[in-house]
Length: 235
Image 1 (cartoon, rainbow, N blue to C red):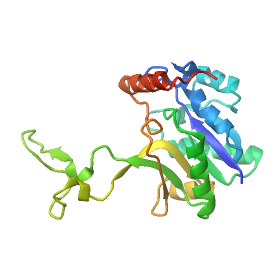
Image 2 (image 1 turned 90 degrees about the vertical axis):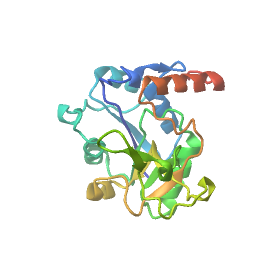
Image 3 (image 1 turned 90 degrees about the horizontal axis):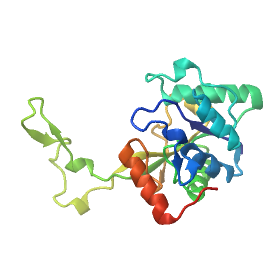
Image 4 (image 1 turned 30 degrees about the vertical axis):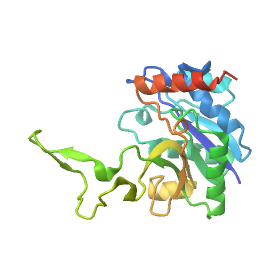
């Protein structure tokens, strides 16, 4: 089985400036994802799609494939991750042959483990290559969420609670996409234009560290604390 690992890393992050190459535990953030992909023999190549020359340089030095800088149209705020992924896989298959799966590894999830990646690949293999997406338990159950009315002066349940169990422990488990793992066949992505469909298989990731998605400076501080507490060092 040939799986293309795709790491998408746009430059110009607004909330965490330069986050994709900012050092975390002595390594640029993007290198954490490159390194976990290197350990996986099912991965035929690690392709980094970026519009930023500095990110491209860091990725190349970490032995990732960076054959071009992403077109400006795919580096705007309106560009979708699906468009970016299809641009990359279309180029790769035209130049280096067909692949069985596209594994999207977002650099903002640096702590996903090799074991988790292998679990996801095994689910993909064992279930006729149906798409697999990483999920984790929701921190707040949607049944206990509220919305504020337009007047800003009152709140009401976000979901109708007419049949909601009285006790939280009786609620069905709720999960959220955690951004750590997306695996799909190229033809399925082209058809659905989404990594998620009614047939998608969940890869449940319970470890809170693996589920972190660095989007703010607060997230970055949490990631630094996790590195410090684990004693992780640069490799």
